[in-house]
Image (tube, rainbow, N blue to C red; front, side):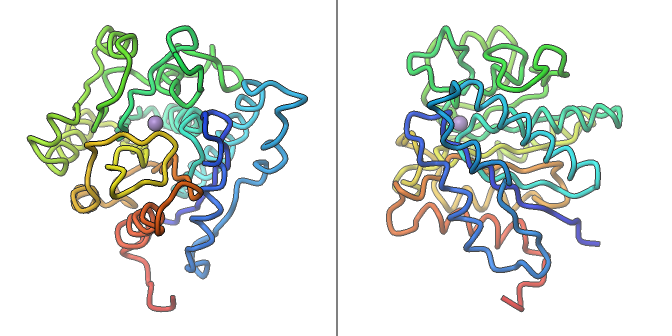
Length: 297
Ligand SMILES: [Mn+2]
């Protein structure tokens, strides 16, 4: 049986300094032509929320957005449909993963989260030099940082021992200290280059599975080297190459083995020759949907 899935376009860019990542979901999702068996959707609240900066603070907007996104994600999880969240900037991870934690909690299960990203995204508002919220979602998920979702204080948090970062290479020392103090496992890019992304990813996945966790992946396109994925808000050199990413992902059945998958920070405005878009489509078409019947495309 193929597991049903549902795409959620999280069209939000207010968490980043370059806000045109909000255009990522639509640009990507409209290129997928398998609507026969996938209910393709855009996040229905996104456009009413996108340009409310004048009459509402960015924080307020992000809080409302993540609250609605989490309710959407929760709805699909409850109906045994795998949500594939397409961002948007990485602040949408707050909505995505709090929903997963809440859903798993009702099943007496816990989330193991793999965060593939050039950055640590573990700032609090006080430590962040840029004050951009997309640099803070992990702090928020761990119970710190700004409350960018309703009821943040009372929500079950991600447990630090169930979080693994991969491909990390750009961060501030406050973030590193924060993650170290919480004993979060970080596989820096240097190690990934030495050991191979495929090995690091598979080990991370297996270790979380051994702990009887449900595994989710949050993938930020800036984990990839800008020569392979220039269409991101915050380019960081010496990243993963396209081939090793796809080979790494191919070891995991993204549809059957994960509780949820999130792809964020694709910015079509900054893309060059559709490099980033084609990479995203390769992940979705060749890996996620490989078991689906693509013959009608
Ligand atoms: Mn990120």
